[in-house]
Image (cartoon, rainbow, N blue to C red):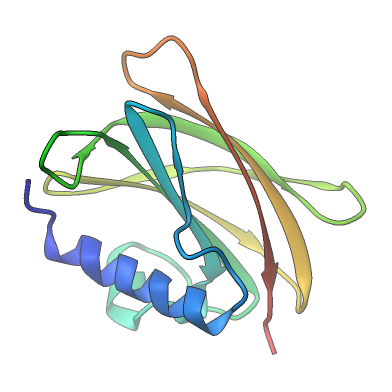
Amino acid sequence: MRMPGRFFLILGSLLAALVSSLPVRAENMQDFGVYVVHYNALTTDMLPPKVARENHIQRSRSRGMLNVVVLKKVLGATGQPVKARVEGKAYDLTGVAIPLKFREIREGNAIYYIAEFKVHNEQRLRFDLLVHPQGEQESLRVVFRKQFFTE
């Protein structure tokens, strides 16, 4: 299955953000057997202006964005994008919860779930997400940590 061009533009932007914020895992994804959940958190100033504008995302060093993509494994392909309900929170080091409100973005066959939130320099957040693929009874839990640098 061919993925739309903007998918690769966004993933490329996210990869650039990953490289600039080392150390990180080589791949921000979790494998759940039938499904793979890809995720990334970054400051929105890392997005190309055109991508931010087209998706109504405010570019700023003090705004974080979480991008989640759910793919169903397909033999011999990169995966089938799956509609899902994504919910969760981020927690700072003191345990204060930051609610995440996800919105769906579609382009062709690609489906992204985006949440925006405020961040501060050197802030460390633990993300705790529940991903509910459409048609499935059980949810997929994704937990990861990310430190943000805004200066």
